[in-house]
Image 1: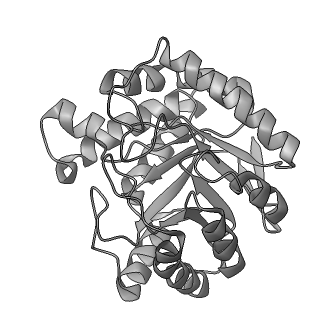
Image 2: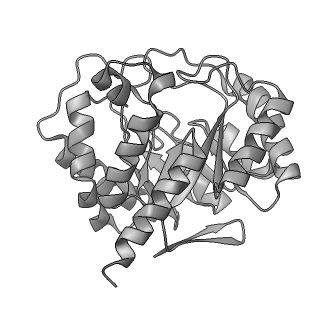
Length: 278
């Protein structure tokens, strides 16, 4: 069991949680442009809350392979109104902001977010880790080799699991020394990894439990699924559920997904499966 102090609200992870993805972006790989207006964002948030999401992760820029970086100010224009609206309509729900900018993180937390989800684990903005420590909120840090615009070029690892684990051993120490007490580990499926690397990380996901931190699995509708199956991201829901189930069986604490209902069903069946042995 893990606990996260989300600005005074205790998030208890005694069973796997579901984090719903809200992309307030025009160009995300799966649903880009669908949720750029507040009405659509609120409607999506309502559906996700109804379907059982404990966390809503709101992001303002695409980090798909080959995406172009936007400024912190442009990202703020997209995420702050969205966070304000969602927090107003669903004050009981934990909101995470998906950003690698410390400036965006600070404004988002002041607006209503209580978790920061950073794909770069502080590597793209050296002020991020000190900012998180000062804000005293949980920090979800992800492993990424390179940056979104170049991460899928010339991908090389000796042992991907060992390299990612070593990264997190160093990163957890860095965060602890900075004063961050609540940390979430995300191995970064699809971020500077080949399909083979992603499956290896998934197979050995339980290795990261030695860090004694919640493990986040973000596999939803990614290329590892749809390219392996020869389909599109729009057709990858079934494959997502399969890999989410594998992630649960290998130690995932949080599933980050586009489709909350199906993920919540996978969690429920996983819990019942586990209860057979107790």
